[in-house]
Image (tube, rainbow, N blue to C red; front, side):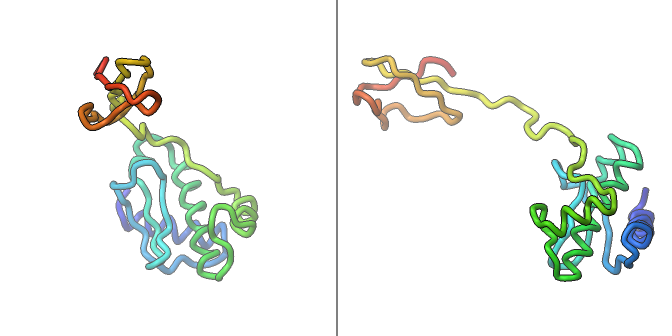
Length: 151
């Protein structure tokens, strides 16, 4: 699907589901990672994650577009367009739009490394994601020396 196909699809869905035209730009944005799409308040455009087309069918894409069109039309009318607003929830129900999209992939591809430190005196353990300089820190319980146990 090309940009102009996406533009036409959004304009068509806007008329069919909402009875109102979509007058702004629609485009794909490959930089979106965890979300299926977004409505941009400043310029009124809608961006769609192209990964949706790779992972799911056309129905999922249409659901995401309808969700973003709910944000669009409510914002254009000056009504509550945010996820928690009653107007938004009502319009989602009326148009059969999904509240959330299906998962688009892992947020974190690699597991985080955990450093384990221990107080030499009282044996209190400290787990850290970042390495720390043990010469600068003391145990918070007994002020004993801290040593790296496992990295």
